[in-house]
Structure formats: C-alpha cells, structure tokens
Image (cartoon, rainbow, N blue to C red; front, side, top):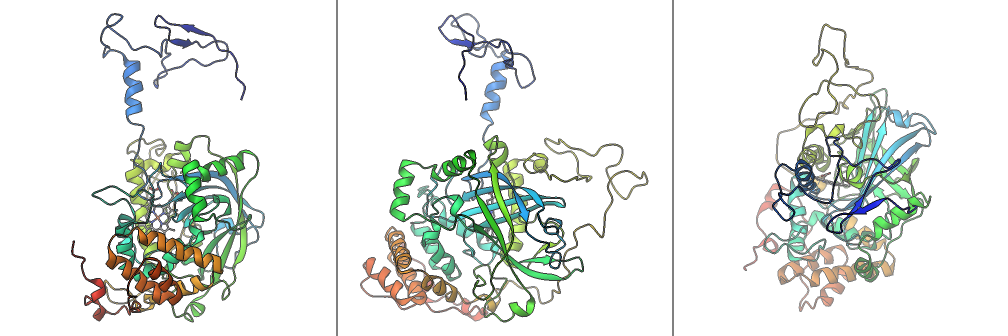
Length: 534
Ligand code: HEM
C-alpha cells in the first residue's frame, strides 16, 4: 500500500476534513446523495442540540445500530477462503455427479474452518473440534460437504444435538466457561452418554489442537451414497488429507499461543495465502457396498464409528486448493450458509440418524441467522451455474421471476421445466418397519473403537490424552461425575483409567462401566444414572 497526501482542511473545532479531489470518489449516503461534512452533525446553533432533520446522521447511526446478525449457534468462530476443486479421474462408474466425470475439471470452492463451542470472539487454539465446511459450486448446483477435523461425532441421533451443545457451552446461570470443555455440565452429559466415548478420545488427543488449518484433516463423518447413471448406489465416506501432513501443537504451547495471539490460526491462513503459499488437500473416498457393510459388528449408519483404513484403504479422487482470501469477511465468511442437504444429482444420503437431522437443521438455522429465505441471493451462497425457479418475493428479494410466468405447469411456453433425466432422483432405497422411537442394537458398542483409537496412539500421544483428561476432569467439581468418567475410561483402557483416576486422587477405583446393550429393558435407572443431590 502507498501512503499519499490528501487535501485536508481544519474545521472550527480543529477537526480534520479530508476533501475529495481528482479521482477520489465523493462520499455519499446509502441513497447516493453526496455528503458535504461527515465530521459534524446538524445543530441548532454552534453549541445547541442535534436536529432530527439531519438525515445523514440518522442514516449513518441507524445502519451502524443494525450491523450485528446472530452468530452461528455452533461454529461461531470461523475463517474462510476461496479456491477450487480439481477432479483426478472420472468416477462415472460410481456417481453421475457432473463434477466427478472428467479428469482435470476444476470447480470453484469456498471453505470455512471453525471451532465449535466458543463465541465469535473466542481464541483459536481451544481444545475443540474444528469445522471443515466446503462449498463446491458445481455445474449442477452447490455441493456442501459440511465436515469436521474428527471422523466421528459425540452423538448418534440428531435429537441429542441441542443437549450436547448446551452442555459444552457456558452454563446458563454463570455464563462461563467460554470455549472450554473443562466443566461439570459437559462432563456430566458425556459421562451419561457412553456413545460419546470414541469422540472423547479424539477430542482429548493432540488432534484437537491443530498447528494450523493447513495441517488439518477433514471428514464428511457420515456414510453418504454415490449414485451412478444406472441408479446404482455405492456407500461413500469422504476424507480431506492435507498436503502438508497432519500436525498439532501440545497443550502447553496452545495455552501460550492463545494468550499471545488469539488469532493464530486465521493469521496463519491469511499470511499463507497472501504470500502465495496455497494450502492444498486431497479428497479421498472409501467406497463400499451393502455386502461389505454387513460384515462389520458395528453399523455403518452410526456416526460414532469409522471404517478403519487398514480394512478399506482410501482412494484419492481430487484436490482442493485455497488460493484467494475473501475481499470482505462479513459478506463472504460470515454470510456463507452451508447446508448438508445441498447435494448434486449423484450424491445422496444414507439413513444415518445424525445426518437425517442435520438435513433439517441447517436450512432452518440459516433463516434465523441471515434473516430472509432469500439468503441464496447473496453472492457467496448463489450457485455459479445457471439457475431458474419460481420462488419469489420475501425480504430483500434481489432475483425474481422475469416475465409473466411464476408457476407451472403453464401454457405460455416460458420459464423452466422439470427434467427427469438431469434432475435429482432420490435413491430408491428399500425402507420398512414399524414406526418407533428406538436405537438399533447395532449402535450399542461404544467402547471398541474408542479403545482402538487409544492403542493406535504412540506412547507420548497416549500420555497427552491422559494429561488432557486429568486436566479437564480436575476442573469438574462434582466427584460422582469424575468417577463416572473414570469408570468409562477403565472400560476403554485399564491403564488409562487407572492413570487418570490416580491423578485425580480417587481413593477407590470405580468399577469399569458396563458395556450397554441398547434394548428397551435397559431403560431401568441404574445406580450410575442416579441424580446428584445438590
Ligand atoms: C454448523 C459440522 C452435527 C447443526 C456447522 C459447521 C460445521 C458443522 C463445519 C460450520 C459451518 C460453517 O462454517 O458455516 C457438523 C458435523 C456434524 C454436525 C461434522 C456431525 C457429524 C450437527 C447436528 C446438528 C447441527 C446433528 C443439528 C441437528 C448445526 C447448526 C450450525 C452448524 C445449526 C450453524 C450453521 C450456521 O449458522 O451457519 N456444523 N455438524 N450440526 N451445525 Fe453442524
């Protein structure tokens, strides 16, 4: 940037008036009216009251008063960048999605990285999950792969999402802690929710404090479907692998960095991209069919489980490069609206109950946050392919049907028409059974993969997990909650459980938690579920 002299004059009170000259544009109101003086409001007399007639003052303050929109209910703190996705090879055998048909095809993309629990102004290096949300502007509409940097999730059913999030956010009476899972409410919920144990192992591991967004993996988490032109379906799991490799910082480093520079991750991404150091990820898929899925003891619809890469290696299918920062943070990163239900023809959902619930939640929350059903008119959310429909009006409509026709069928030969061949056809999966509120027994093993994750870690990484659990649980004031957690840990790995139990000063080790079997009879209250007397 160059700094050059601008013509300026001083007013009566010594205030600076920078005056437009030459090519410098004239400051205007939002209505386009040129402004003569932006330093002083209109007064009755030199020292008198401000006049309500001052439309420039009123417009400026009114607009400022309305600058804030609700922050995201989760993932409030985030940072985004533009780039592209490049397809390596045709995947036509598996999917009819246009973006996967031709090797070398480049499709524009926008990515937003985020933390989950903290507010918009919280620090970057919290021990937390990171969001890895990708919007790919395909020729058949936007595909949003709204993932995280951890391949599993806390809960199996979307109906528990408000509970897990309430428990991790600041407590309702005291409104703390901010961006910290080290508190009674969180561990109370977790200790009562054994399905969260696998996720907890990841969150307590070094994975939860990335060195930068550029060294982070991403996961679609759920099992999705690819559907090809013959309407044949293949299950698919999506993984983003960073070209720079996976790197984290240790907890004591994170604490220092958070104090010294709470913007550490966003500054890193900004500097890397501005200096031409474009971060890159490979998209990998795990592809499998129903017969393969049926071989596992766990359910491929259960989002607390991974399909081990040793059993089913991943296949690289493309790369994502981020090469341009937004021009305006609010317009792009804040207003971008990711929605899991944004899928092009050829990519479809599985019956994962978490994914099914997300498909409702994101549309709903975007209306609340962005304020109008026309949020799709915002440039960051609008498709980059031709699009035409008969939706109209509403707040801030910037794109309405042109001409006479705003319905169909119609006799005018105008406007868009359906296309059975090109359009999205939901995969015709066979569904049957009684209508029930129930969790399938195939979702009941909560410890095996938690154990596998723990023992797959190197000794220093295992130590970090034990230290993180000890630190977090030492902040928990209620003894029963600590004991309940240690009981779960003993079931995951006896050495880990004992180590944390001793470090917490437990006088006697609790019995390992019983591995639950999710049948209806198990709904009887067990001692572990008793209410804590306050
Ligand atoms: C936001 C991922 C589960 C509701 C987000 C974002 C990500 C994400 C990455 C931030 C998007 C952005 O950067 O703008 C995930 C993953 C999940 C999960 C990977 C599980 C595998 C859920 C569930 C629900 C939910 C179960 C609700 C039923 C929301 C909501 C937002 C959000 C309401 C805020 C969206 C906004 O205001 O833009 N999620 N989420 N999420 N998620 Fe999820």
